[in-house]
Amino acid sequence: MGADMRYSGLRVIAEGLRGNRGWKPVWREPDPKPEYDMLIIGGGGHGLSTAYYLAKNHGIRNIAVLEKGYLGGGNIGRNTTIVRANYFLPGNQEFYSHSLKLWEGLEAELNYNVMHSQRGLINLFHSDGQRDAFARRGNAMITQGDDAELLDRDGVRALLPYLDFDNTRFPIYGGLLHRRGGTARHDAVAWGYARGADRRGVDLIQNCEVTGIDISAGRVTGVQTTRGTIRAKKVGIVVAGRSSQVAAMAGLRLPIESHILQAFVTEGLKPVIDHVISFGMGHFYISQSDKGGLVFGGDLDFYASYAARGNLPMVEHVMEAGMTLMPMIGRAKVLRSWGGIMDMTPDGSPIIDRTPVEGLYIDCGWNYGGFKAVPASGWCMAHLMATDHPHEVARRFRLDRFATGHLLDEEGTGSQHNLH
Image (cartoon, rainbow, N blue to C red; front, side, top):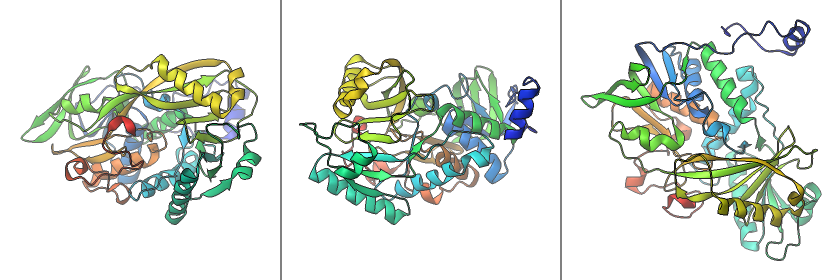
């Protein structure tokens, strides 16, 4: 339906003059076919981008995305929308650098406004030790080819004058500025990839829950769903916090724990916060949306759960951190909060790999990094499924690293899921 429809400023004006009667649905609502070359389980950002790049980069057309609810109804719509490439370790560095480059061309690529705003991200530091750590990180980022600037106290004050610089417990010493970092509209990212995949012939099948994975002689042959059996040559599991449950249908036990991460948004306010700010002593991060709401979050709720909601002690913790960093936030009214089900690995880094079942692939373990990874995750998962070889920038995201000990522990906090 939407295959021939391109968006442009002139089109918007013309449709406005005609009462907006010429717009068509942006993707089809097909019934599932009996068989596909590729099946993607999960209609979130990562699943939709995987399907899009399978079609665009590898010319595969007989693809379906199976979503148990509605497209974009999971974590892609339940996050704080931050986009960045400020990672420290080789393995993560080149992946997120590749993802940021894809972000920078995404709107032109998809012919869709994902509202990518490179407003700059500032990680604050509050001690000499933190300053040294961020200086190392900044140098690593520059070596990778990304941008980083170490700001002293006055440099931060010039950009963020409303912070509490002289807080007795956590005085602000400076910050690491990543100018290419920023935000994007989370829902629009899902819609843009969905529209792009549909335009390339991908079947997007909503309200289709996978209830079983069919395996014969060690090879996947298809899936059982609430809309019948669907056969497939290859199947990708891209279901975020539900990864362990879906993988269990294939007899696999993943090194994943699912935890809840809460986020919050205030009432709409006039522009006041121009950047993304990360508090170095309270795991608090905040930005302001284009609608004016302050969007912020903090730590995990620290207990495993599949409930997309959070607990009140963590609400209190996040609010305390916000008040410590910027007391002015106490005047804003919280409009709503939500929880995302986070798929946490023991080392805090993701998995994009083949599974022991032939033709079955897994993309999971995104921890706090899922939203910013959407373009590169799809790019690399599509490459893996199409060629059976890992993409160069994702080669360290192996499933077996937890057995061999080759961990990719970005924060150096050890093998404990909830510490990442």
